[in-house]
Image 1 (tube, helix red, strand yellow):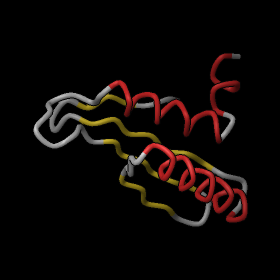
Image 2 (cartoon, helix red, strand yellow; image 1 turned 180 degrees about the vertical axis):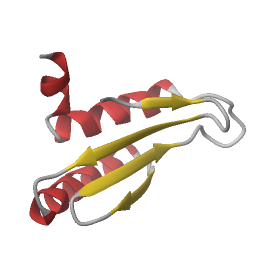
Image 3 (cartoon, one colour; image 1 turned 90 degrees about the vertical axis):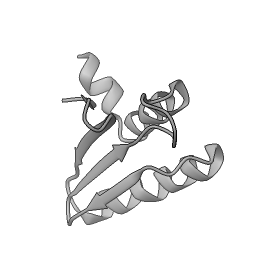
Image 4 (tube, helix red, strand yellow; image 1 turned 60 degrees about the vertical axis):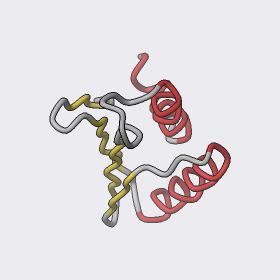
Length: 87
């Protein structure tokens, strides 16, 4: 299951599942590097083997930007989700 688009308030949401905490930690480290590279920091909340990500529009905007959508795709690529979903 991919990103969910929400209307009120506008945002994108996704939940990632991991085999164990080590896999989650590796993903978080790679996501942090991607965030630093593009200067975008989504909301993230995690447990032992899952991560919830929420991407909100920029302040003053009522829609998620193309840059934010590209970042969502980057997270999917980090986790190998693009390949899984296209099968």
